[in-house]
Length: 427
Ligand SMILES: Nc1nc2c(c(=O)[nH]1)N[C@H]1C(S)=C(S)[C@@H](COP(=O)(O)OP(=O)(O)OC[C@H]3O[C@@H](n4cnc5c(N)ncnc54)[C@H](O)[C@@H]3O)O[C@H]1N2
Ligand code: MOO
Image (tube, rainbow, N blue to C red; front, side, top):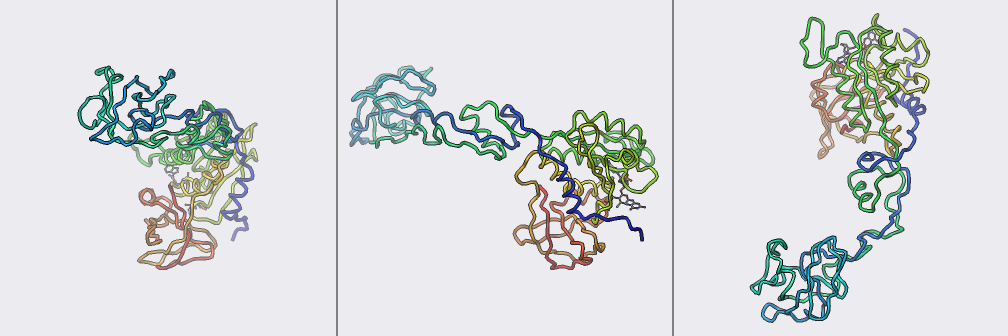
């Protein structure tokens, strides 16, 4: 038995999160701020809507003029002009008059309500209109007479100024994650830029002389580099700006030089492979000497060998993940994703977890004193989970068909059908 210390999953994550600091806020243009965390309270500068406006295409009228109107005895009003959305100069609607008005156009002075065009003859002198004619084809629609078939109450079909949000109100509080509706609100109140924590730049680098890039021809002993693709995608999915560096050969000097080259564009560096005990485990070789990165054995499966530290003059956090594809992906989920979200200043850095009942034909086994992460499919309706594929850390096809990780705790070595377990839901 070796007496090498073993770290728990929780201890390792705690050490990582103690090192990773949220990035300094910057002012970003709205489209670039999507998915970022706001770091200012945003106050509404103007009422929304800024003015009373129509919610329908129709006629702006005085309510007294259409009182008691019906199809048989319509109210006949003189059309004094058009009010289109964006109109700045408005006609005043006097007694017996109506202004043709479009959805979103300001309610003209004198008018108290809007009658939808369908409740009128549309100025045609015929039956109920279904639509207005385009102004370009029928300019006469902005004048003449309109027959109104129904009365309206004051303010009918009018959206009041400030009915959405008022000047001086808090639009969004600091700490809000900017999704599409929040970006929409910021634009609606006229904000072009906002102060947010930027997306972290994450460089994902795979290592291994056996690796070639997809699209190339496999020679003897070679395999395709899948980790750099999977983890770059995972980093992007977590909210990062991700850069992929495909397959650095197993040479410590080349690797160190490549890492140093990448530091200028990295807030976080992730490597895969080369961290176990083999004769060509170059990540360990290249990063141990300077003392910047510590290599550990974790009480987990997969993902036992892990490296973590801060490198270069700017102390950029680096996570060295094991090379087996499932090990690197599970390690990413457990350690890199929370680190990315901590860099972003996200209020919640963890994946959701649920309790579920295991459904399996054969009892699952798990190594003692290691937290096992099996791939599974979760059924929310029955709150059950079924394993997908075995425990092997090379099983990429099963991983691609899973939607969750089944957590078998350290003290559990067997999990039979019906066992209740924790499940990490993957997005
Ligand atoms: N004697 C021991 N051997 C191993 C131990 C151990 O404790 N003693 N630990 C095993 C465990 S657990 C893991 S996990 C791996 C970790 O190995 P490395 O991080 O050094 O990774 P490599 O040796 O470079 O590769 C492992 C495996 O994964 C394949 N691989 C690597 N990179 C990629 C990639 N980008 N895309 C696809 N596949 C990749 C590689 O070809 C190997 O098959 O060590 C065990 N060994
Ligand atoms: O712990 Mo390794 O990460 O199983 O395959």
